[in-house]
Image (cartoon, rainbow, N blue to C red; front, side):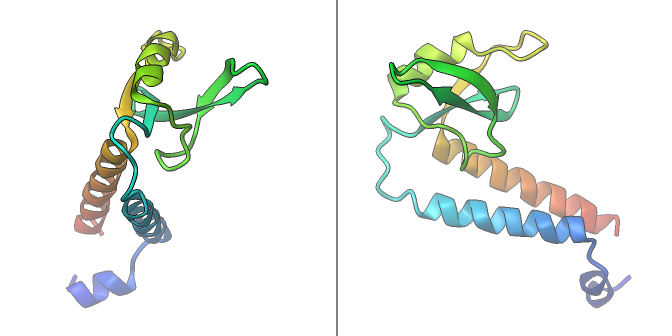
Length: 121
């Protein structure tokens, strides 16, 4: 298969992954002024989390956010305090990570997956 043929026969899933990668890259670019002490998210076994917050500031209903760009952000200290309290069904404990780092990891992972899928097309 030539490069031209491969480009014409791209699976819709690969197209969607490219769009997701471009969206994450644009979001990352928009974070230019975000301080290093802010912008931490909670991740549990690679999945970025979001929460409900009541009027008193109490977090509940931890759930998968759908990506680092959609995860609830915290200060570094708050994220470090909250992360150990987050566990998935396997008992894996959450971790805090800066949203920029999580975005860069997600963008790189999407790139690797796209390359692998295109190599087998």
